[in-house]
Length: 184
Image (cartoon, rainbow, N blue to C red; front, side, top):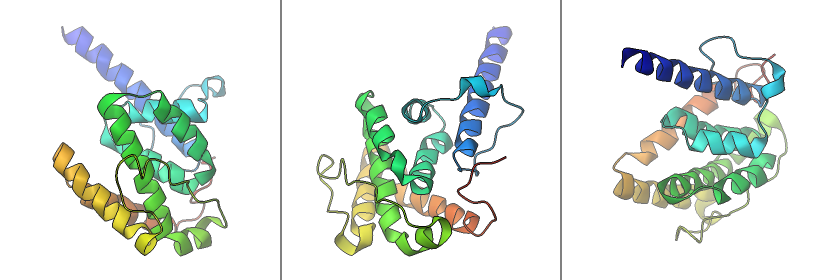
């Protein structure tokens, strides 16, 4: 029994390290591997990375998809492709994180422009499906607020606090040299 638990721990740690390394390679640096990772031959495709992040039990990895979309909004098609292969609660939470990224991008448009330069807007997918106000209302704030309130009702956690904490983290990171750039 203890060996199985230890094996599961090391498997989970290896998965964390692999996903963290993939995030770092794409410019998301606030999630770090705990140790050295394997070679370059096992890089994930963008949609596989989103799928694996959204199916992990750790909320930090799931929420890293928001940072990834904010750092590289051109990955939105890969995120949508991954969502199409999910079901149930996992799909619902992934759609909500996608919409949160789109809303946060609109809220922080000027800061993101200054930090990473011009970028495409994350398309407003899933907003209507989730019955949310349009993203252009109050620069995404109304969408994010409504999304957070409904998430709290459904899942019992303070989603607004989670999104604002992530916002604080990313806004602080944007001042660091190399933010949004792959880690060497």
